[in-house]
Image (cartoon, rainbow, N blue to C red; front, top):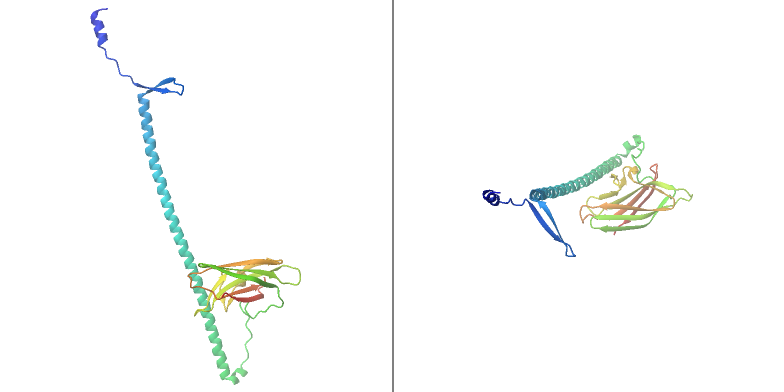
Length: 262
């Protein structure tokens, strides 16, 4: 081999290593080494960075969705409260309209009676009108015999909520079930205009339910505990009396009883 070729071989530079060597020592003191390609390490680091960035964006979107859902839930709750308030106001307005109609009817009847007393001759000549059947069950109906009875009535109030509970007894002499509809009417007679709260919800006319079938249906053999709940608009709303009105399945009045809350 010539000296010139030896010089050329010695002048050739060695290429840097393209692989990384890692050394690991186990608890026994033995050493193990392994090599990883530089390109593989770069690709793994890039993938890890992309994964971290994507995870950050996904987590941010997740919390944004949670905030949006919370805002929608709060909005839905606000709309629900407004709807319930509108229903309460509408119910109170209907009760006031019914009360005003009953007042007008009473005034018209009183004026008719006064005109008849001022002109008794004319009233004798006129034919007496036939009695009009009431549209619904009223106070004129009287139970022939006791079918049901009420015992152990109690009242409890917490804030704007009031609960009435009592024991409804089967008072029939024959051993057969008693059934019908029960209405629990809370009345505030101390206010200028009497206010009514009913359980279940029903319109009131002349202190009595207009539709007896909208009461709470019951079927009892011996007794049953009945509970009614009322929700008031303010602390000032306070009924002075609780009326329990019970009808049978055909609309016949079985029981009407009032209890003072004071």
